[in-house]
Image (tube, rainbow, N blue to C red; front, side):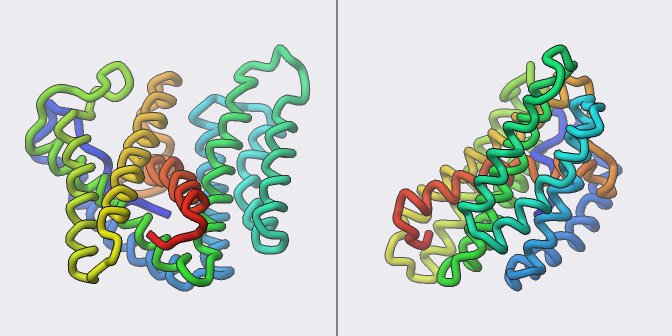
Length: 277
């Protein structure tokens, strides 16, 4: 659960980037690991998801200035607990655990500061955790579908970074993330759809239009996830969610797009009665 690079740098920083080499080297290590574990599935993938969401939960508590020990602990353990529930009891068990976790965030004193942000964090991390584990658990299409999901998310980020850095131009949402441009947003969408079309043509897919539409929806979801985290960071006056990944920031900075795209992927599969993309 990682992504290779930021969406794009600020429009006024299109020169040399001293962190670019470090970003690329870190991605060159993390991306193959993520793909290998996703391909293996089973306990290894569940452990990766549990560890990633535990770190992301800790980062969310810091990002949103959550200091209640119970809320911080819940955000850290929600991913691992959901992974266990999904592995032992399936989606029904994990959804029940998620519902109980959400309800528990509303306990305590009503005057507690940042009362809503633990609940948002549980949903923000918990729903994608259930979705991505459910997608991978499908014995027929889980493996290829998860790799496809990762590919679209990463292609969107790469395209957004490359086009935004090269072209620049009008900003996409200056009040949320001053560094993102319309050129980057369109470029990320274009690259994800173009590569999907090429792959569908090479593999002789009987439903290329469906694959292209899926890439379109997932790419849009990825960029919405990126914007959402940018909005949260801006609201709390933070630059990055953490520093654990060299040259990249925190775990949340790397998986923000995936956190929105995974539930969309699961919803589309359900809507199409489990058909492969």
